Length: 207
Image (cartoon, rainbow, N blue to C red; front, side, top):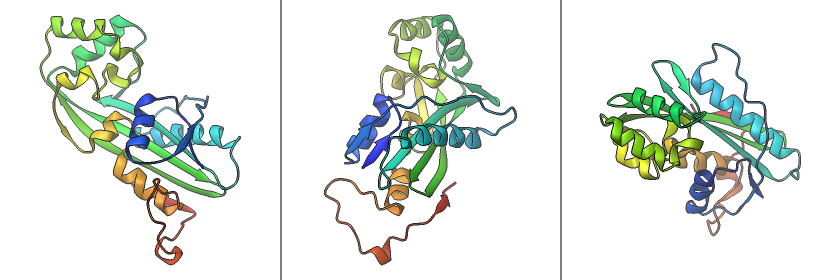
């Protein structure tokens, strides 16, 4: 069984879209990161902590999937806003500029582990104070890294993306499918290829 160690509706939506059958088990994990940790390494670390927490209740044949996303602007990590004022502050900083979104993924199956991250660059249109206030008033920014959701009303703020749209949404689709195949986890209805064509590696870095 595939176990998603997250309560994120975006990640559930992506896995469902990709055809996976999974059990959702939100995991509480330490989210502190050592100072100076690069964003890519940070999201991998947090993803692994979540996956390990979920794997505590998993069977040996189960695969736990943890994921974490951060927004980085000028080297500073933007997490979820503390309140509406904080959300507006973040959006003013992103206005008219390009930032980077990092999403890390951890897959744990027994003694096997795959860690990787992906990144995408997102450019915002210049935003007026009225636009920012109207978007914040929808409530959508409040549980999103960087104070916006690209799959919702926040899409109207985005001028362009370089990279995987789903990385910005919270789970890089293509890389995740390929990593799961290495652990012999397939979407529903997908034929299982011969074992000799799908080697399972103990640890793979897909960066």
